Length: 64
Ligand code: SF4
Image (tube, rainbow, N blue to C red; front, top):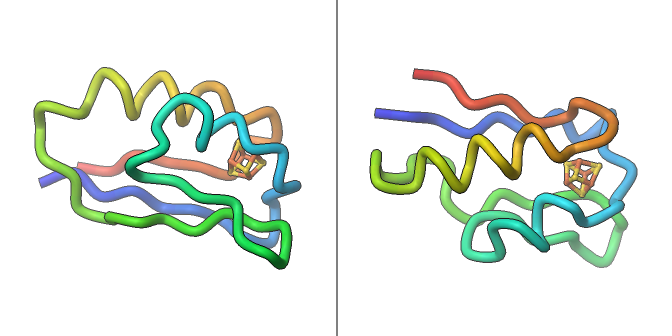
C-alpha cells in the first residue's frame, strides 16, 4: 500500500498539495502541512502523484 511522507521541516505552508488533493493534505495553523490519511488507496495514486510533484520545496514523497 502507498504511504505519504511529509517532511514538515521543509514545508513552507504554500498549500499547493492541499489545493490539489484536499482530502489528503491540510495546511495547519502552524503553517506546515498535515497529512490527513497517510495510507491512501491505490485509486488515488494519480491525484497524489500530481500533488506531490506540485510541492515547490519537495517536502512530499509517495512510497510503496
Ligand atoms: S505543497 Fe509542499 S510546501 Fe506547500 S503545504 Fe504542501 S508540503 Fe508544504
